[in-house]
Image 1 (cartoon, rainbow, N blue to C red):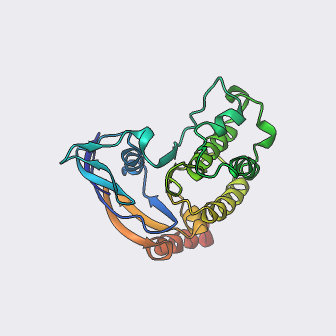
Image 2 (tube, one colour):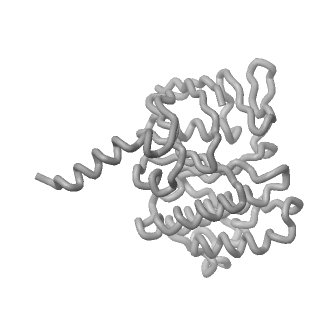
Image 3 (cartoon, rainbow, N blue to C red):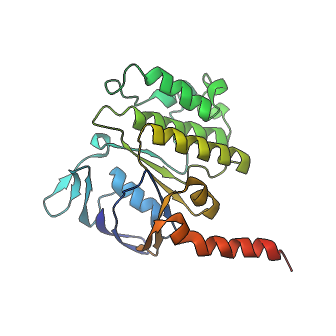
Length: 241
C-alpha cells in the first residue's frame, strides 16, 4: 500500500507491506487508522497512490484502476456493528458466505465461529434483541466467516477496526487467543486497528505505528511497543499518588 489522502485535518501519507499473519495498526485516535482500513476495503478513493494484493492491483490512481469493494478479496468489521435489522443472528453471520471455496467445510466453520464468539444461543434473535457487545461479536463473526470461506484463491484479507472494544477483559482475552489460533489455522491474514498495548502483545502481532497520518515504525510488537509497555507497567507499579 502506498497512498496519499486528505481527510479532515489529517493528511495521510502511508506506505507499508503486510508480511505477517496478523498485523496491528497502532496509534492514537485521529491518527488515520480507520481511514487506512477504509481505503483498503474500497470505501474511500485515495487522492493518489496504489494498493496491490497478491499481485492484483486494487487501486492505481495513475492508470485509473479502482476495484469496487464487493469485488475485492477483503472482508471488514467496523468499530460500530452494522447488522441487518430484519435478519436473525444466524442469517447475519452467514451473509456473504462463500459457496465454492470449501463447500464441505462451510457448515462446520459457521458452527466453530459461533461457538468461539459465544453467540450460538443467540442464533434466532434479531439485532434489536442484542446488547452492544453481542452485536459487536456477531459483526466480527460474520466478517471472519466470510473471509475464511472466500471463494477466490486463498482466504480474503480480514480488516478489523477495534474488534474487541466494548467487551470486558475476560471475554476479550478469550476471543483474542481463540481467534488468533483459528485464523492461523485457515491462513487468513488480518490487519486490525487498536490503541490497546496489551491487546497487541497478546496477539504477538507485527505492529505498524501511525501518528498524524504517517507511518513512524513497523516491526514486531516487542520492537515497536516494548518501551510503551514498560512505561505502562511502571505506572501500574507506582500507582496513584
